[in-house]
Image (cartoon, rainbow, N blue to C red):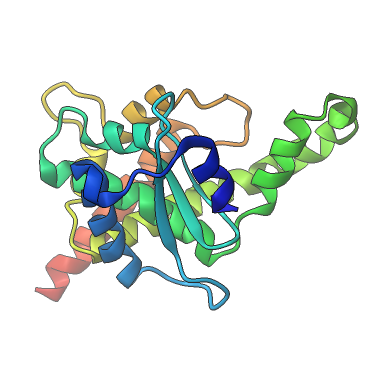
Amino acid sequence: SVSFYITAYGEVLPASDSQAERAHRVFNRVRAVADKSSKRLPQLVIVNSEADPWALALPDGHIVLSRKAVAICHHQVDVLEAEARLAFVLGHELAHLAHDDFWHREVYAFVLNTPDIKKNIAVGFQENASRAIEIELAADDAGFIYAALAGFPVDRLVRTRNNKPQFFEYWMRQSHRRANGRQPTTSQRTQLLLQRLNDLEEKIAMFH
């Protein structure tokens, strides 16, 4: 539950940190347009973990964002781009909440910390790896749509400018994700969202 993370790291309140306050404002805008499960009301908690950027959705309805993740979203970009980054990261986790995407994270974490049974069910995880990647790509797609619907400039997330890496490459490089076959690659994520952006632009042009 969220109390574990608050006890372990301490909560960063919006009133005490301008970046945290911006993250909460972005969250409220994205939550307003996002799909929701009737089982829970999404809530955001930012914790004072500065070691690595991470974000996760909990079964109790909370999204926990590390302070480092908030800082990464603000790194060397203007406010509009920082908000777009936050909107996507939060939208991704809101999609996990809406679709009850918890089992693969919980079981995988258990296996990592239980060496005696790791070999016995490794095969099962390999079989489920493609499904886990599908879940992550679907959350990317939904998070991108939520951020766009909430009015954030999502094109800045997937287009390289001024010789700077696009956001996914930067995020994954900073977050030190394990190459375990259960996370989609940067290329997979970018290709999907570029296609989604093209689709949106075509529909907007037709609408106008």
